[in-house]
Amino acid sequence: MTEENIYTGLTQLGGQTEMPQSPEAAQLERVSNPQADVAYCVRFAAPEFTSLCPMTGQPDFAHLVIDYVPGDWLVESKSLKLFLGSFRNHGAFHEDCTVTIARRLVDTLAPQWLRIGGYWYPRGGIPIDVFYQTGPAPEGVWIPEQGVAPYRGRG
Image (tube, rainbow, N blue to C red; front, top):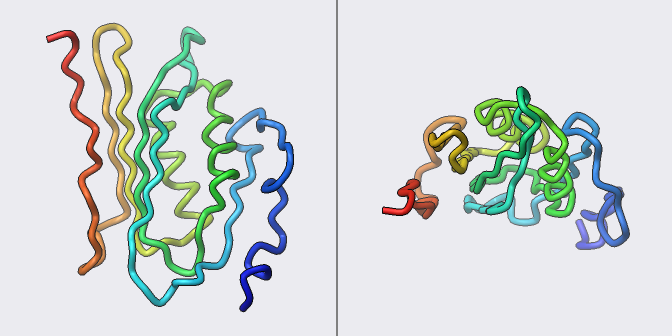
């Protein structure tokens, strides 16, 4: 398979693309993994993730860290950025947003392994951190710590 062939069919990369109105409307795109015979970890960090509180409509903010060990597919990063951005107008609790993102990635990519850490900033004085993973990490793959310190407030 040549390099140009793995990018055939991508519709969002290389041009102006509108932000999807909802996570359901967002299209996650994938490309063939040219290193599928090697187990390695891919990390995406989204330190400015936003969604809406479903009760008040007020914005909620999180630092997301997504780690995955790809199988045959890689997520195309612009489509991931647009998918994450589609939550800006989406009302859902922290737990639902975090797990929805993970499950959508798993459904699209069928990775060997995936984990997500949702480090949510406090609302009402309580930070909520949400963690999800598909199972034990594959043996022999370096999976670094997510590196997001627990919330400490001003102290």
